Length: 205
Length: 200
Image (cartoon, rainbow over all chains, first blue to last red; front, side, top):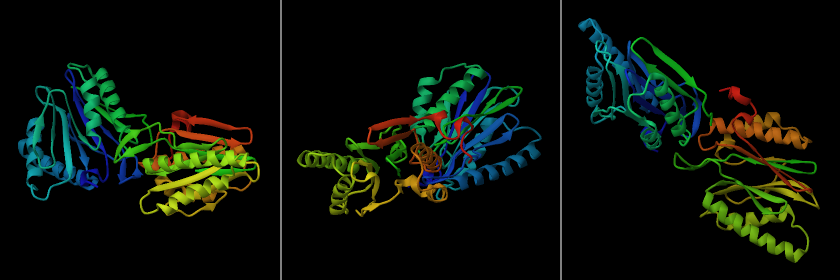
């Protein structure tokens, strides 16, 4: 089996009007066996910045931890919150350092600029190639299913409530067609004054 | 899986077919009739099991006409076993044959990969079965009633569907007795633990 498909999992982020949302499934498995249903794939990296990672579970944790380390030093030295675009470059650098023996994790970043509150989403491949889009970004074992859902459901300038419903439906129906993703979905919606976190009632098979 | 009770059998299966990790069919019917009161539960390669089941259904229909009475469940199981053993190197088929006949009542026979034939009070197969052997051994009681068997099968399948990625969808049940075959489907909130979700 492909290394990126050993543990399974999926992450998805969408952009709305003045807000972003990021969602991930909760399954941790080893090939076909489900080991737990409370795996964390989305990590807070700033007051309005979340990082989601899909791929090999050990590398998901390692990358998130090492990134947080670098981010903490950045914030101490700079005395301010990092911009999402700069954070993207930090992630890219960390991954490319391992160009010929990479971390098997593909990140997705969602956040608001600390000053202008402009929404930002991007994704990177496992060796750090960044891609910024204006609609949605995703990674995981059911990426094709998620692409199909997002292309049909996404529309521009969605308000936070509508964005939540859209990302939820995209995620739920995509993971339900993947044998190694699912077992619950967690969704974070980042607005200028709050982050709302909800756990969806999902199929547990 | 299949369980015998006094007067018939209860059989059940999940409804997921995968090609790799993609769920090609989430509402598959893995309970296949090979005669009026004889069903088989198919696991392994869908192509292989469908082909063998079709061949056995034909052979049984012919045999039943010659015999001028309903075929025995043991005969159906033996026909499966002949094909599964002869072509054991080529096939990937784990089959449970279960049904009712006038001679011996409800019977369950298992024909796992390799082609052995064994009668059991209850039988399980498929990738998800590994996760529920403990539950089955702890919960099974000989002499259960039809509805107890149905609950036993539903709980076992639900637990397997949570843990095994290749299992899922809905639970299809069938109760086979002298009177006939009664099929039911358990989906979503019908599952044994209701809306609360499984323990894990």
